[in-house]
Image 1: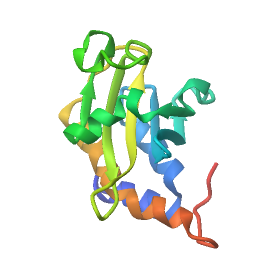
Image 2 (image 1 turned 90 degrees about the vertical axis):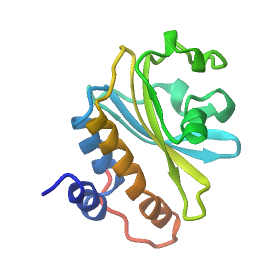
Image 3 (image 1 turned 45 degrees about the horizontal axis):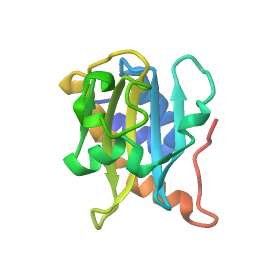
Image 4 (image 1 turned 180 degrees about the horizontal axis):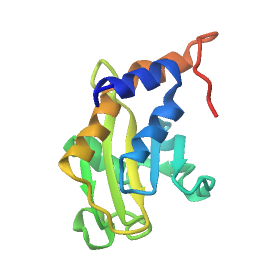
Length: 160
């Protein structure tokens, strides 16, 4: 299955969590996550840790104004290998907490921010252009699947 059809098939047949896990396999970062915009915050909806550990409590809900993700919305993407040395992160209390942070916005059909898809790590990690393209591809496919989850009685793929 080619690189573009695989994430779509995973979303359709196995669900968002499995597509996120698959993305993580192709990324050098330890973590992959989807944060949804809710009431001025980013709420972690999906989380995958390559080590299988639970989500750190401090990322369950992050004030949007303090998050790195608002840069992804402003600039259309965020590529940061080391937040401790990146002046774009000076405003944030999370600067240096997660060093690597790469994100793309997930937009609804009206081009409003719905969520962000990101990969991050406590170590300095850069993404290749191909890896970042994979991240952006999955983000572009996610809106209808995230919306379907909101529909009462909607079929949902098996979630682990």
